[in-house]
Length: 169
Image 1 (cartoon, rainbow, N blue to C red):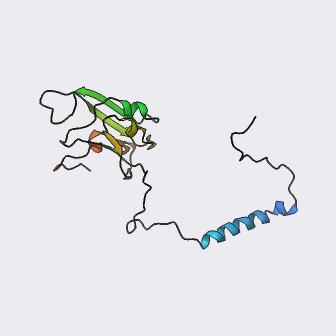
Image 2: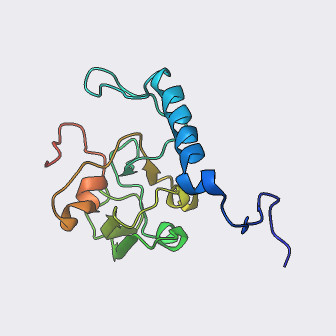
Image 3: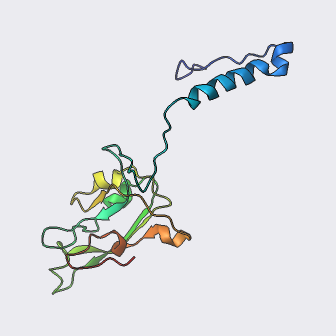
């Protein structure tokens, strides 16, 4: 069978000689690598004092967008849930009632919208699939939690708060 890459190396199956049985050449190679790393600059960042710079394509926590008037952009079309390879997004659609025009842009909205961050692979497919630009991945990390339930983010955790509105921590 032909390999996909040219990186495959044949396995050397000849018996070891006396020096190889002592593992001294292997230990010497390991020590040389270790001493090379001792004199290089450390990659450690002192976190609170120094902030690490991220790549421009870094994908962090999800955020549900609002329009300029404060209405939710999400129309519960389900394209983000279908595009998600990890099946981390679940949603339930509902019809907008009379008098709720100031809350939702379209007649249909997401009554329940959840993302399981333990399943999410931060691929960004949900962001690309959304026709209304309702969801995007921000530049913030997912915070640590002690229970699995803390990693399931509901609609209120993901929505951008309205001006004057406080998010519950």
